[in-house]
Structures are given as structure tokens and as C-alpha cells.
Length: 389
Picture 1: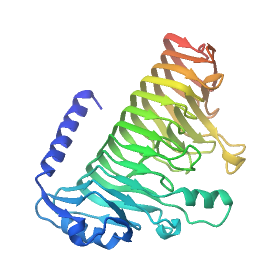
Picture 2 (picture 1 turned 135 degrees about the vertical axis):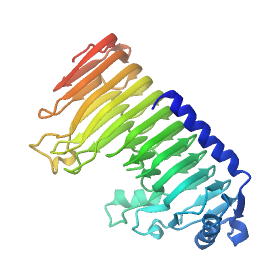
Picture 3 (picture 1 turned 120 degrees about the vertical axis):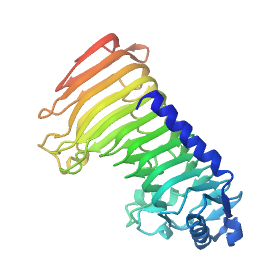
Picture 4 (picture 1 turned 90 degrees about the horizontal axis):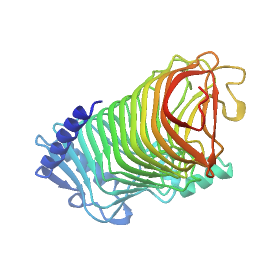
């Protein structure tokens, strides 16, 4: 995605938001939602959504200040016109994690075109669910906080997500989605609480966002194309990760992904690509990282094609995922481990076309190390640690 196209996209989407301020407004309180954080407002929110979605004119679903208790809810389309969901209050999940059931989601937007979701806080109260999982008891599958399935031409802005049971924000099978100025907060020990997960989607932009969580700050799954990320703050967390890939044999590829002007602080990983060590039709191609700062990051640059947790389902196999044309440019800062660059690629499908340009990573004010296996590429400019390509 060129800067010109991105600027045009920003202009068009901003125009969409600004116009929505004059839309017909439907207030959840007028549909008897109680902003006390105790009364179940699920039915009232669905009634408000029905009125908004069925409006012939562009319409706004407005959530004023206050706390609104919601069980799992589906805001389903298609709608008759543009829809804006403007949240000034907080949406609160039930204190009993079992109340969200086993659907896998808390708030779901499904099959909608021209949608804007802005402002507000989502508090999923995930701590008791994490405790259940840690105890080894039988637990529900858990819920993603806010999911967008088959949503096209959308803007998600100014949203804060706290303590999701699982992933915070999921973008699945969508086209032309902008995520900007969102904040994700969960403890670094909270399991599987990815900040933003993108999968099977084309033309997603993520900008000006901060993620402090217990899993990937941004995770990128199969079928992702033309993903642009900039001005991301990550940490604690597991970095910006493409994968895990090769989970399935028949798998779509990941291509045209860019991350620029971003900062990682105290994260377990920085720029990571990982795949299971088993056969797959998947691939990773045309990935660009530029102007990245690492502050005490455990694995600033890592490609791991031998991912095999607990040695189950993959021992003795090699990754079929083909990784090529990955560019690292102007990556600087400090590594929390001696090996600042790790390229552990597949013996059956070596990494190809890897380019390093101006890499300056140190470990405890000393020279860091690099590790290369089954990889081909070129370097230009200053390379620290020493090049192993």
C-alpha cells in the first residue's frame, strides 16, 4: 500500500466518521438500557442495534457515559445504510466468566458494510477465566472481546479493551478496515490475550495504537493481505507475530505486510515469523519492517520455522511454509538476550530473499550474537550483531 493510497483511505474514512455526527441517533438509554453496571442490557442493546441497522438513513447507535452490563451479543447485518456505533461509556462483561458460554465471542459484528465503532471501554473481566485455566479445571473455551466477521469498509477508533478472556480485537474475513488509536491492556501473564488478531482479511491498517498484554501485541494469521501497521507501541507482550502458520496443511498465504515507525519495550519478541514444523501449502512473502526501536526485547528479530510446543504433532517433520522477500531496515536498540537475531528456517523450505539494512542491536552494552540456519539473503549498511547470512 503506497502512502498516497493510504492518505486517500484515511481521508475517505475520516469523511465517513465526520458525516456520521449528523446521522440519525438511537440512544441505548432510550431503549431502557440501565447504565449502572449491574442490570443486564443485552436485549436493550439489540433493540437499539435493530433500529440503527434498519434505518434507511445513515444512523448512529449511541452509548452515553455509564457502565453497561452485556452478555455475549451479535450485532448482525447487512444494514440498510452506514452505521456508526459511538461509545462514551464502558461495556462490562458478567463477573462470572461462564456467563459468556462457549460461543468464543463476547461482542460480535457480523456481515456489515460501512461501519464505524469509536470510543469507549470494553472490560471483559478476564481474571477469573485465566485463574480457571491455570487451575487445570474444566473451563469454557473463552471469549474474544470484540470480533469483526465479514465486515467491509470499517473504522475502529479510540477503543480501549481491558482484560479480555482471550484475544481483545479480532478482524476476520474483512476488507478495508482501519484501526487507529486503540489501547489494549492485560497483565503480561494473561494467556492468549492477543491485542489485535488479523486473519483472512485484505486492506487492514493499524495505526497509533498501544498494546500491553500477555500474548502477541498483533498476531497475523493465514490469508492476510495488504496489512499496514505504523506507530505501534508493544510491550509487555509477545511482539508482532506472523503465525503460528502451518497449523493446517491447506493454508492461505500471508503477503504484503508492512510495519514502520514502531517501538517494542520489554516484550518477549519483536519482529517474529513462526510456523509449525510440519507440511503446509502456506507462504509468507513481501514483508517489510522499517524504523523499529527495541528496548530490552528478548528476541528482537526472529524467524522460527521449527515451532513445536510440547513436542506434539510435529517431531521429525519440517515446515512447508515458504518464507521469502522479508526486509528489515533500520532496526535499532537493545536485546534482553545475547542472540538478537535468530533465523531458524526450514531445511525443506529455506528462507529466501531476506534483506538486512542498518541493523544496530546490542546486548548489555556488548556485542550481541546472530544465528542463521537454512537462510539466504543479502545485507547492506551497518549490521550489528555480525551478519550470519
